[in-house]
Length: 166
Image (cartoon, rainbow, N blue to C red; front, side):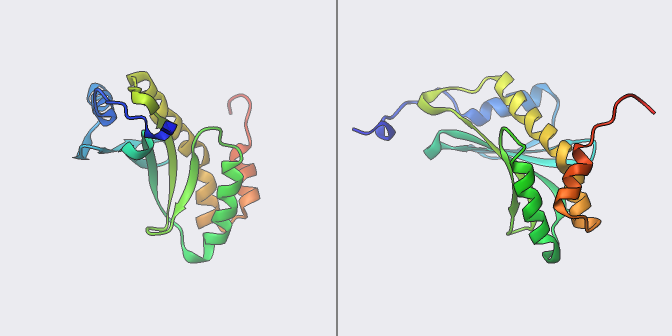
């Protein structure tokens, strides 16, 4: 028997924990099925559309975080360069260009193999990490898509840190 054939009975659906955390934080959410929940979270730069999906076959809780930035066809190549540059900096998760809708999406998963159950702290950190990452690079996408900036210059602009207050 291979390791992948080992069946473990799960005590609860991991999406139930997401719903619990969302309710405790007074976040509005929509449960579209047993294995999926969606919510909109307000950020500094944009409203982020967040969905959590339980992927039974991988025993993983998948988070997708999209923002309303359509990528025009003429900017796809430069956005692809920016995605590569950003993903080289990001420790957890990754950005992707979802071509069906031409939008930027951040993806991250929490592996729950062997029947592990997510804790509310894990869920909060997963969401906070995704939102922090989206906030950190949102302007770079704006610079490339709307200002016509090259990917490397957009990265320099968002990674530039100021010291002190004006």
